[in-house]
Structure formats: C-alpha cells, structure tokens
Length: 599
Image (cartoon, rainbow, N blue to C red; front, side, top):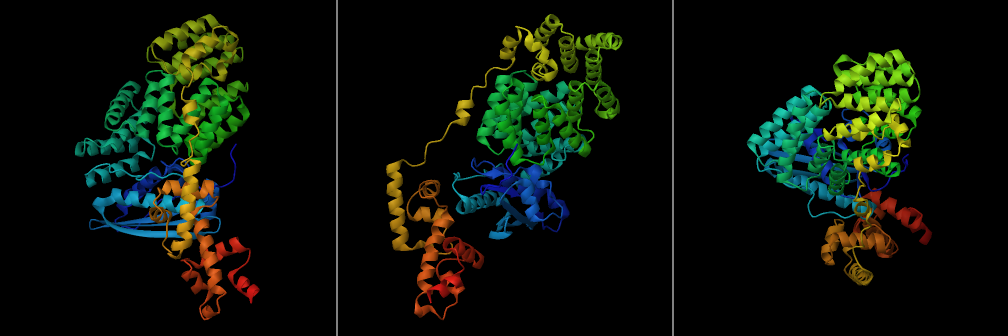
C-alpha cells in the first residue's frame, strides 16, 4: 500500500526528555514536544510524524535507525527540557538517521513567560534547516501563536492533554476537570475548548457517558472554540464529527474535514476521517489516497491501523481485514470497533458460529446489548435459522421503537435487507433518517447491505445520503509557481552576481534566510529559485562554492603549512563531517586524494 522509501522532507520529533529536577514536569516536556509537532505539521510539503507514533518510542531503548525505519523518516529531532526558577532551557538536535549524523544542534535559555516565542523560534529554525538540507517547501513567518497570557493556564492545559492522551475514561475525566480549570483562568483559551469537545466526543462514541448528554457538551464547546478561532484545524475536525454523528449530515462533515486538512495537512485524524467518508460513499481510490497520507504520518497509531483494516473490509477483502483486526485485538482485546468489524467479516465469510462466539467472549463492560442482539439476528438470518430469527427479530423491532436506539435502528434495517424485504428496509430507512439516525450513514453502503443495490431505489437514496463531495477540485488544485519566468531569471542573475562577487559562502553561519535578506528576496522565493529552477538545495548551492574555494586554497603553495581541515574552515565549512561528505559527493574523491592528484 505504501512505499518503504524515506523522503528528505520527513521528520519524527521524539519525546523531549524531562531534565527538570521534578519528575512531575514530564507533562511539560511532553507538551513542548507536541507543540513543536503541531507547528511543523502546518507545513504542507513536510511529512511530520504525529504525536501518537512518535511517542510510541518514549522510554524505549530502540536504536535511532530502527525508529526512523519504522516511521519511514529521514530525519529525527531529539531534545530536552529543563524548567527551574521561572526559566526554561530547551535543547534540540537534528539527526540524519541513515548515517546517524547530527547536522544541527541548538540550545535556548529563556524566561518561562516567553515559552510561545521560543517554541516558534525552534520550529522555524528546524523547518529552515530541513529546507536547506533537503529541498523546497514554503514556511510561514510564524508557526506558533501565543495561546494565552496566563502561563499557569498554559501549563495546566498541557497537563490536561497529558491525561487525555492516555485514552481511557478515568484519565479523560481528569483531563476534562483540568480543561475546565484552564477556562476559568482564561475564558479565551481556544485549545481547552477544543480539548473539552474532543474529550466529550470520546465519552459519547465510547458510551462511557450518556450519549446525548456527552454530544451536547461536545457541541457547546466546539461552537465556543469556533467563535474564538474559526481557522483552527481542530475546531473543524470537531465540527465534522458533530455534523456526522449528531446531524446525520454527510456533506457538512466532508466540508469541515477538508477545511481541517487544508489548515493542517499533517493531521492524521482528519486525513483518516476523509478516507472514512470516501469509503462510505464508495470512492475507494480517494479513500485509499487519504488513508495512505494518514498512515504515512501516523503509522503506529492503533486508530489509524483500524481504518486500514476497515478499508479492507469496505473493499470486500474480508480475510485480509479479519487478519488486520486480529492484530489490533492482540494489542487491545477491548478495542470495540475492531471487535464489531471482525464480527462483520466473519458474517461475510459465512463463519456464523465464530461471529456469535466472538460476541459471547466480549468483555461485559464494553458490550452494547443492541449490538449483540443485532449481530446475532443477522447471523441467524444469514445461516437460514428460522427459529432463532423469529426469536431475535421481534426483540430488535421492539428496541428500534426508541428514537435514540441507533444501534437497533441499523440492525433492523440490515435484517430487512438480508431477508430481501426491501420495501420494509426503505420504509424503515425513511423513518430513521427523520430521527437523524446517523448510523445509517455507515450501514446503508456496508457490505452487509450490498443486496440492496439491485433495487431501483438504491441510487436515489445513495445520492441523498452521500451528496457529492464538492471540494475535491479545490483540494487537489495545483499551486502556481512562486515566481514567473522573467522574475525568476532576473533573481537568478542577481543571486549569482552577488555570490560570486561578495562570497557570502565564506560565512560558516550563512543560512537561507540570511542570504535571502542579502539579495532582497523572500526566503520562500529563494528556496523555490534554488530548488525548482536551479536544481539544487541551499546546502548544495553554497557548499559547491565552498568546495571551489577550498580547491583554490589547497593548490596554492602559500597555504601548504595549513591543514586541509583548516582550509575547509577558511572556505566556510564549520564541520569536518559535512566538509568530507560534500567534497566526496562533489568530486568523487576525498580531499587528500584530490590534493595528491594535483601534486
């Protein structure tokens, strides 16, 4: 499904180590890591591994090369955080995984109150160094915005995220309490409203809270977050979930998901949700495209891997889906979505006894009675067991009489389909849609309902449930070049004149941004000019001139008393490894072999 090749524009930010004296500050170092991941994730052309997959390796003794191989990235960022006496010290280093080569490191000592500024500075520098090393992408002037003027509120919000990311009811409830405290301290803190919406959405979909009550809370907090920041990717992702699960509105769900992806391309939840929506409406090519994007940036997340298995199920690859789901259940036997879809696979594979046995083995705390009843009813119909069908079906009809019994609604519909009682299936569908029974968005196009496709009414209902996703053209639109041909030619001539006459490459601290200032061009335009028009990244461009300067110095008899490394430093190189690596790449030989060949 995915290529195993690593691309230069790919990075995993590993959890920053907590070097504070208080181990309780671990939530802060985790939070800083997540903020940097989120900042870099805004860059469209950069593949940034999500928090879940990066944090998989926390406190694990795994070689760096193996981590990079599992995550399919070329670059790894490591760092540490130390907080003491109102100050924060952050260190960071970029490592090229294939060669285990540390090509950049930096440290910052700042007042804790300036934490947002230092996060922005770190994120921008990392992005710049990646661009200089591996190729063009556009970088905004700022990647991190100040969330709040209350440092205590920000620290508490990081602690709330720390608990939420444990993904269990008890810790999510703790997170809810902490987010509520943050809002009391700063009623304008958008991220805490998004956190509350996400937390209540989790409680609703897992039914660890009464469904209606939890969704109402999610609605309230999502709309408050939208009022504060309508351009927040997380807000649009929450709006997409609400549109789907509370309004049964497929078109709105797709619109908000597209917006979330546009605002934050490296957003695995939004990418996999877009894939999910395409699966439902039957566009499997588009579904695969977005699934691949989600897997590329979050390859170890159990939720993302579930969507991979669900794609196989929707593609009617039932044996493959079953195998993938069993791998998920080996890691978490209480993975309810994986259990249910595995039962569906068993039904489609005609392994009815295994499907019903699976239900019996489900832990009681995650068993939903209507779900169990519905699958048992389908199994009895599909195996032709009239007696059991006559026992189960009346109970299913009775349960479906309740307006909010969405599970019973969908299984009654599927039971009618499996019995070829299509008139009753469509009549029941019309009634359930008036109740906004969103689960029909899943079941109508499910493989268990495929027999319905032979009915002439299927197409019109399909169009009603799944309106065409109207932003595909906008999302796939190819961007215009940053510079037109005439301007690019003029800028290139000016750049080459400046470099040859002023020799800025002799400055070992020269960066793309600094060179852009010197030639009076925006850094994004200079990056585009070098990579797209001249065919070199910044480091290749600058080091080419440094190598040429080194050759001049090395062949000058007046410099024979200076070591080759000394001459390299005089030519603008600031690292022996970088010098030797690039010289051999440029000339095909080592510096000493070059000098000997000329003597």
